[in-house]
Amino acid sequence: MPGGARVVWDLRKAYREKTSTRERICLNGLWRWQPAKEGTGAVPAGGWGYFKVPGS
Image 1 (cartoon, rainbow, N blue to C red):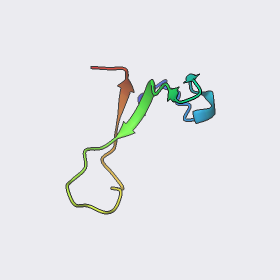
Image 2: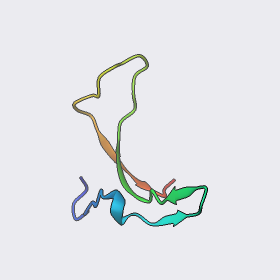
Image 3: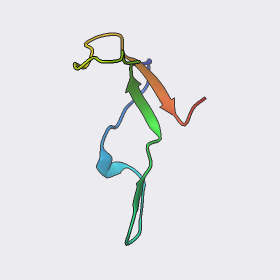
């Protein structure tokens, strides 16, 4: 994790818009990600990175 970063991964605290037929949840924030290899069934243990959303 980048120094000084604070992550709150709590869906209850995410911004929401709700109608009678649809709900939208804001996914802005710091996401943990890793490129996947095709055909792998297990989640990799290492090599993870972070990406800020929205971002370039």
